[in-house]
Length: 162
Image 1 (tube, rainbow, N blue to C red):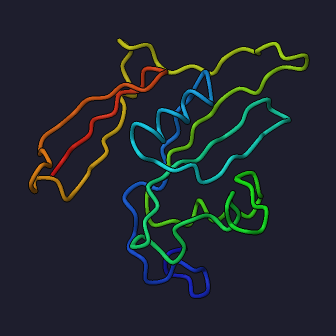
Image 2 (tube, helix red, strand yellow; image 1 turned 60 degrees about the horizontal axis):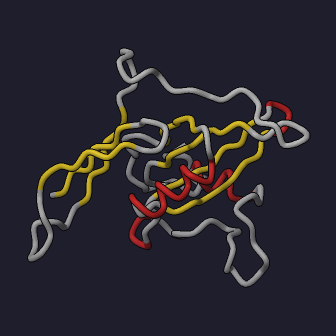
């Protein structure tokens, strides 16, 4: 895809990792954490009603990271946009940066919660978490080093400041 003329991806650098998927027990709490604590932006929401879950996509969009830092349809676009607009789904997969996909169960009919999606237990082998690299640190008032955060569902996030 990256070398196919007309794909919109020609000439872009090959990304190291396109998407990371985690699971959450509470979409609103998780969104607040990733937006407020990490500064990520919600890019797309995809309800998958037949299978009773939804996907929220987050990223660090930047004007220097592609032609369009915001999804085609979003609140505040002046056209009544929505993160649930189907146009945002393909756009999300075509960005030159890693996106975070958060899977959350939808509420069952009548408002009762259904079974929850789960992560590995803290002591289980396998997925540990992920690393966010922040460049530009080290200047006046900006510390270098590492910081470990844990999201509301126990996913560990290592922040590397350089």
